[in-house]
Amino acid sequence: MQINLRKASALQSDIQSIARSIRIDTRASFEERETVADDVTEAISEWRTNLERKTNLINVLYGIREKVGAANAECGLNTKLTEHRRVSEQRDLLDEIIDSVKGRMLTIEQIDEKMRKIEERNENLKDSLYSRNRDVEVFTDLMDKDDLNEYRAQIRSLKKLQRSINEEVLELNIRTHIVLSEAEVQVLRNEDLI
Image (cartoon, rainbow, N blue to C red; front, side, top):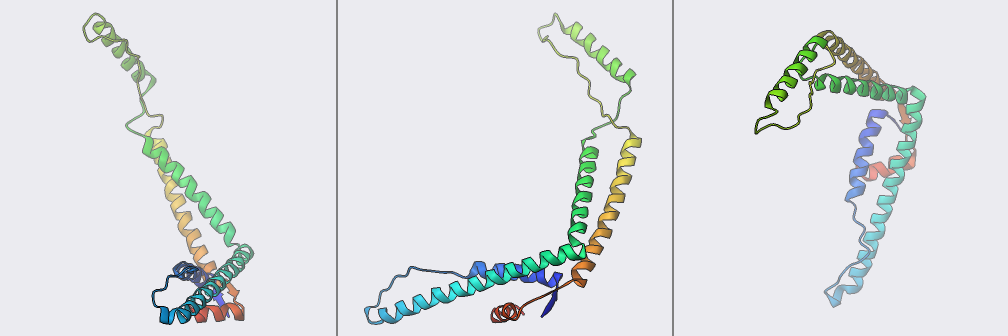
């Protein structure tokens, strides 16, 4: 049976969900002496059946993952996903830089003037009750409006590239198929997954 990578991804999630829900209880308590022999036999059968089910699901899950990994490499999907991550990191970096801008970039003259005023204020307060030795410190952004506009344009370009990559990834996920073995298909049918 052939399935596309998109279906394989959904199947993997479903398999994991079912496998997590299967309980394997290797201990039990019994209260009825008359039925204890049947109850023990039933409890042993139940945990062994659940162990077999869970083992089969895990084997199918990792069989599918192995086939998906090989198909991803063969069709170029790994490369696309890596490219998408790189673009995302670049976008995050530029977003972080833009978000760090708080006001405006001061000129050297403006910085010098602010420093002079702070020094004067510190000198005037020198003899007052509220005086303390204050450092002269002036903050300024290091990017001007042109820089910001350039980075915003780069972010728009990166978003467009991400959309394009997403479309290619979707196409590859739909177009690329893996083949499930008869045993895998049977396990999936037994669990009502196909």
